[in-house]
Amino acid sequence: MKKFSPGVRDKQLRQYFNLPQDRPLILSVNRLSQEKRIDVLIDAVAKMTQVAHIAIVSAGPAEADLRARVEELNLMDRVSFLGFIHDKDLAPLYRLADVFAIPSEAELQSLATMEAMACGLPVVAADAYALPELVHHEINGFLFQRGNSEEMAQYFDVLVIDKELRRQMGSKSLEIIAKHDRIQVLDQWEALYLRLSNEFVEVKERRLRRHRERKIASHLRYRKTRPRMVRTSDLAIDQRFATEE
Image 1: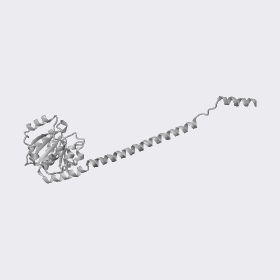
Image 2: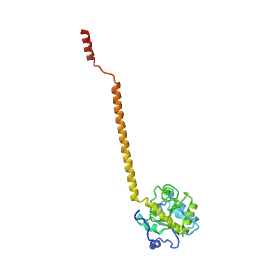
Image 3: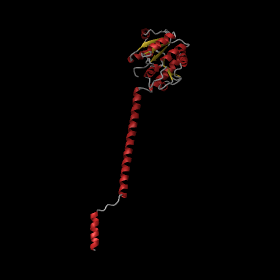
Image 4: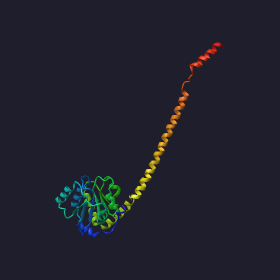
């Protein structure tokens, strides 16, 4: 996450992607596949009352259908498809944005959301899977009911209107994502593995100890209950002496 941080906006990059200069930019970085629900994002744009521009980054099997949906809703001047962009080039693009959007219903971690937060962006996200762990409703962004484009549009409008709210929520994103710093996370995992390893050793030792105790107890019971064995030759000798007497 170190390379993802707040920084100066590159106006030339905005020109390079032919993005308008006079309106807030909402950025979405996610694979264009059905489960990522970019269609919900596009429908939300159509329902917004405020003017903003949406930049969609990445590629995928649903791209043709999504482009067709944009044309169907006559949103060509409000939605741009930027295509696939390499990870190393994403940070400057995050810094261009005012809001990060993620309507996906299948995020188990969402690195893109973490990267956006590390760049100081407020987030509008679906209330699904790992996203609520990163996006705290009304703190560093908004969570909308999955698939609800109207609710997503309402949150977009709130953030587009209120620049100060965007700044406050962006600052909270930085605070929240700091707890997910790679070094801190690795330290937490290391501590967890160490604790689990110690517990595993303790459990194994207890099992071995109980096994030894049961084995010893079983041996003692066997010694107490086994019949006394007498050799027949000894009996014969005892009987002979008894006859002679």
